[in-house]
Length: 135
Image 1: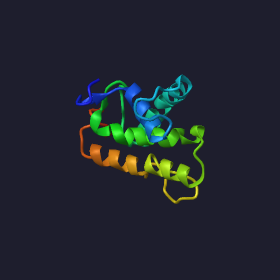
Image 2 (image 1 turned 60 degrees about the vertical axis):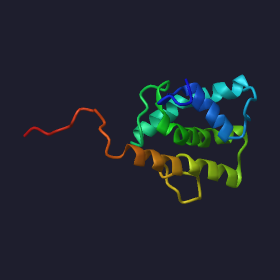
Image 3 (image 1 turned 180 degrees about the vertical axis):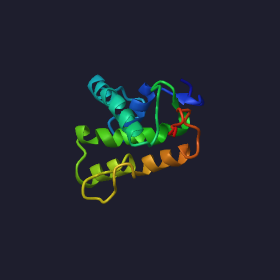
């Protein structure tokens, strides 16, 4: 999709996450194994974000552009161990994304990108059925 489109795709998200990890540079071809690994992690990450009530991404090929950068940081943080990040670099990448790096005191869901997504979606309609108790 065009860069000025209101939506971005899953493939663009994967490429951005790989760039955030330093795996690829601008214009460099992507290793199919790296792309495949991150691609397999997208669905579980999106389900985790929905379970933590951070944000729901129903269609990975229509990601709102406003969420794109934060989602790329979360995906990068969740995939960082596979790409050799350790120690402080790994903790920083995880806490920049979803949060929850061991020993840092940042709980899961309190990372920088997760907080940004919560702020962006706060007070927005969810369009889910309203729950009520009938006495």
